[in-house]
Length: 249
Image (cartoon, rainbow, N blue to C red; front, side):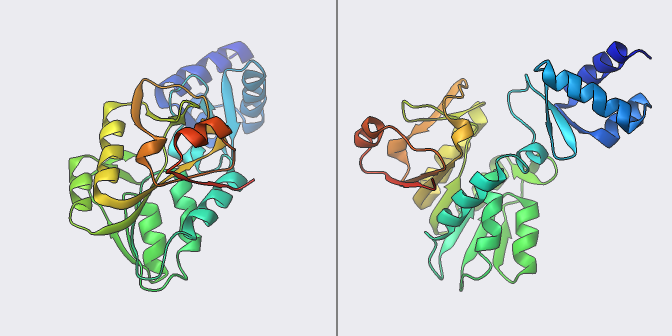
């Protein structure tokens, strides 16, 4: 198989799966890891793929898969998560959505006293449970591998708790102050988070700024706090002056 044929096959696989590991490509195409990595380097230079820790994602995909997002913008997400955790008091009941940013909050919660966590992230739930944090997993169907739950059953679980603070992220955010989603389901999820949480905190990496999607979930006026590694224009903050803003840089 010539190099161009291999690269065409890699792109075909990525269009179907959006994200794969290098090992997976080696097994599927049956070429050496060195050859596959050279192909990926060339595809990345052409702007067709984006490489990450251990794998590669197809650049035209609307949403990067969770395993990719876990390892992107680590420093920024960690700083956002640290600030978010400061908003949690001992004894609080909190909700964490299935975003990669809220997963970073786990390490900052294990020393909180008497908190209760509800989350649709099975990986995070397992981590917190192992560290003695009272944790409930929402249940529902797996909507994203390796362990993100969703659907009406998951949302119904939230209605059973008296949630003090809810934390969530989204696919995109624009400088009109709109929180965006790629689907109607995402809009519905975000509005349920608002409905069932006394306070709602939006975690937004600067990579989300000015990334457009089809659906508007809510605006900055619908959240109590906005945390980001990127600053917003003064005019936008004045327009939504009731929202608290925390910038990590």
